[in-house]
Image 1 (tube, rainbow, N blue to C red):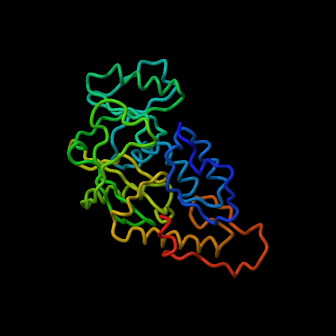
Image 2 (tube, one colour):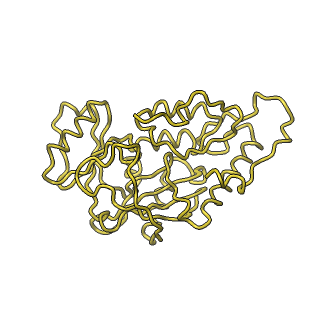
Image 3 (tube, rainbow, N blue to C red):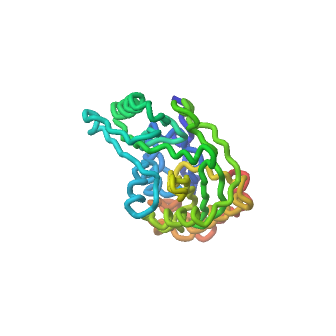
Length: 298
């Protein structure tokens, strides 16, 4: 297990912080309860705790599919199914736990690797994990994935993510698998699916500081939702012209809202323990950080 990240460091004094933006969470999947507990200790976290809790379990894909979003077909297997015969879809498969990140514990299996795939599923179930099994989307080998990044509810830029599961076997034993990333211009179909995905969320899109919608092309060529990243995003800011400034401006705007309205959370659905409620002093004298000062930290 890698050394704990700062989010798992109880020695950090958060009293001087107004807002924390999640940018690196790669070891949360093994300690998700601890991670969510840490989020609850922070004055305010973005995206908000309800969003993070919902998005760090990939069963959110089931909810989005039920809402009409075209998604990669998924078979869901829980620990209660351990004693049952594990039935897997035909063809090449991808097996992974529903709580995972960075392609950890994720493997691709060929059509003739059913016994190895079932053994992988059983290992995860014995560990008490829920499992998701998806068909391997062959278009990824040539076309890759399209990641559409949204900042403050609006489309910012897009990237091409090269294939990670090039052959059967575990992708990585590290916190994340290296990726081949390049700029991409999404087409109208991809934009439409990304927009539909954000519109189907339990929160208004304006409540999200950031979102990344990862799409692949199905057998018929239509885009399908593979994943939605609201809690552990690689936003690839350097590949989108002006993206750093847009994100910094969105953060600065939220800092202003926190300072000017201490009575409630400015983001729908997100718990806020406003900074200063238990502090004395003149509430009208606080300053706010401008976008240009945030840029070096992104």
